[in-house]
Length: 266
Image (cartoon, rainbow, N blue to C red; front, side, top):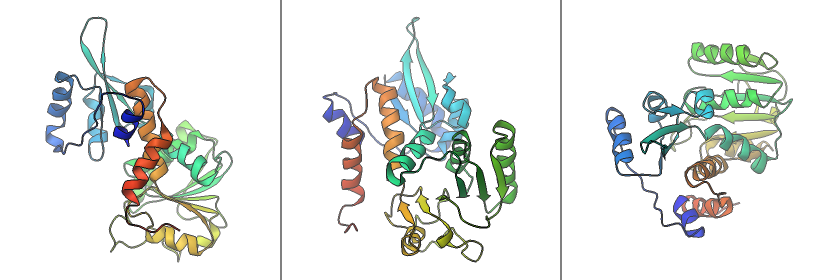
């Protein structure tokens, strides 16, 4: 999507993928700085590690406690500084609005998973002034830690550990269950029925329809996968690096052409 965006704006830039072992992450960041890269994206497990490897944290990275975007910026002294950002949170809310038409204020949300991107998602939902947030996680104490953090920062948001009673406006899957064909659904339907959810969002975008989304569609829920979040966070990163508005539609088309290649879309 980034190379398509560079081409659309006539930029002589190139976006490349590199596999880096976590133990070599600091060396990789320093190498990119030495080679005058404009910036980097980081994915798991690097997002948390990078917090301590940059010269400066943008407010977004401080707020969400993770770095998924790095910008190399030359200072007045001629030295190149490494600045860490987080665009994941904005990518999620952009996608929820665009793909599901959801304005989060005052809504009831059930979130599955609070590790990694799930932590960022939970905190971002709280900043949007939702009314109630139900957290379900395999490790209960991790959910309790996030709940305590939200209660401290956003006391107006009611946080409950466990499945809700009654209906919710949104069910959000922030687990990795669904990435593999043999994966079970992340939702225990003996505890919560999909018929009680108005909309279901799965942060996974490949496969394009997880077992959770297929079941949600059958239950009559509005559904969306994580492609919009991928594009949203990518567009924010593009703007950080280039200082120019991102051609989001071009980026989304490029992603969909790859992800949906050979797949019939309903």
